[in-house]
Image (cartoon, rainbow, N blue to C red; front, side):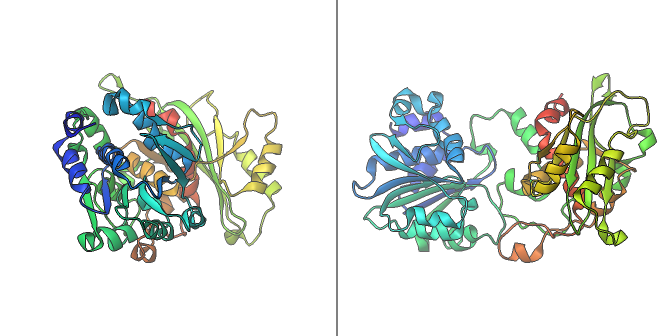
Length: 432
């Protein structure tokens, strides 16, 4: 592998980052999705493996062993990028804690929490590669840097941007050269292999703070309203004017012992524009019980009874044979899930733990609202009442973290659960 080979598969920005990264102990690639930062950093890593000191470990770190496999080793096996010769010199079994790359043994580490520090504590590291570094615990990163204690030791890392106050930006990117660090900012325009249509599709896939980060590749604070694009006149429809439905994906349920327990039903409309299918998602109806409002705390059995009484009601303003496919429940609601599972036996429905990546779910809902692909009927006053009050946590932002204020979110969580958990079903429909 030489510079000419790299240049054939890389943009000028990618090639320059590979060359310039070799002059610094720590090299960081950050920017938008699909910007080619991982490809550039892996070329740099392969060169670094060849030059790495013979004493000390070589390690690859990711959020988990699965993400390391998906983001690093699957890409290494892409012969159109790295060639068959390189691919043949990389051996890794998914889930394993070691690999062989260009003849060197490489340790694979998952670092999803502070306990991961113990996996490298005491080690002497000659070369480290970190995937999704901004998701690492800061204590782990600091320990990793302290382990680079042989002459010529280096660290290479990629990441998507987060808050402007994130520890990575504040403590490493901004100080830069004074800490022997170089960083490279990439956007999709720096990836020579992306069609213009794909870039346009991705630009439509994010809004708000997520657009700033995932498309422009900027470190941006999450502040103010979570869904600033919400407009009742634009996004709310009358239940009795709801379009015909193509599908009812299911119900998302949030669960509370002292807080509200809620259910939001999600459907897909059967609409056309200019003779072409133009479906939208619709939050059709909602159910909820809040013990704070009544002063009466209900048991799981009582909540299940009330929810099951609501479930078969008429949720469409016209005759329909459609029924919900799924029920997605708050993953933390173990006891209620057992109760529902027992009570729904024989109905063809069973509660499943919902997909609960909060930021990913917020990004999905925000993008749907921004692109007019989600509407809410007036049968969902709880959801509509919460959406304007849902705020980013300013105190968390000050510390570089992204989180929402845990208030005014019980109906929103139910809607997020069912929308995010059924994404593989509705996304191809909306792309038509």
